Length: 522
Image (tube, rainbow, N blue to C red; front, side, top):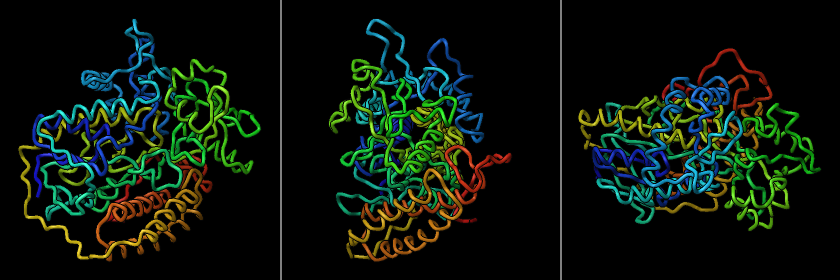
């Protein structure tokens, strides 16, 4: 048994920010299923939203967030996030983060504009903001005291005792092929998103909904999982794997066009190409189905090469690698699963319905994002609520005793899973979810998805009984559970709101409520 005061599962902005604070109070076990740097944070291009300009206000940022959230944001949570942002940004900068300035002699930030924002307020570092933030946090965590880092370790399931208190997790060491028992007074889930549940996603390979699936199996409330945000502009290229064309590109004037070269966003929203991303994704989906095309174009040629290379150096370089010159060519793009607005239901401190279990970052649903996330509020979410989770857990720590009377994890099977069968299950789930539970849903599609998923789930259960533990097996188990939760949540919402659009109920209901799923009272 490996014991610590805190067990942090995940190494993105939320998990690392929490661990860096918690290690000042107690011992920390930090586990991540690949390397520290493997997280969705490192893939974030656009930046982090924060009011810093004298022409901007908290009130405007709050209002933009509430509008994007389409009636389901928690106003108190939005207020906390927006007003706490400058302090958290200062902490990040004190750790070594450098955001772009207007020029080398100017102290003013070069602020970006993205869809849904009424003002320029996106702090960025070119188009690799998340990568630079992750570097800073990783550098700091490697120097920190009282932190034991366990890379290549994947959590299997949370440990909940007879008093329904979380006291750690069973963890699979992928290098040693053994299962360890990690015990802790406080367990923090910061496992990121669920993008790999779908066929097309901007998410990294690690985004298999692990935190949400584990919390669900442990009896935690899961909220609003029908709201899966599809990013409108993922690079469409046979050799490219899930490369995102940042929303900031449209923020800087890029125009969406069909394959005839005709702009079309004016037909769908008054903000045209700067409309909220759910509207843009749905507009692209309609255009593709109407014309029978596989992609649309994003055109920023009019901004000129000098501007494009300076503002989007990474995107420019990546596109050039695929023989697309952003200064001369339009970029082929397609919508892709991007951000999970729902997740483990949590309060402002990250507390869940399971005692001593906290959830922060994308795998949590605290009410900030509502039915549709405002661009660049995700990094802000992880940063701000990691701080509040630390504050609350620090108060709780002296009153928690680690329960060491825990059964060891037992996997009696000695057989190796058939990789062909598991790969087939993996691909079938993702294709099923994309075709039937994607941007536009119907009652018929959801029912078909639910029936087929039930059969796949039985196959996966058999794999788990018959085969030794492996990362592939654990990930399939998790995406099946997450897919099931998304389908049930989507079937329960008889309206179209935010990132959930159903052709059977195309209008909004007057009743604004969250969808809560719990395995114990379905």
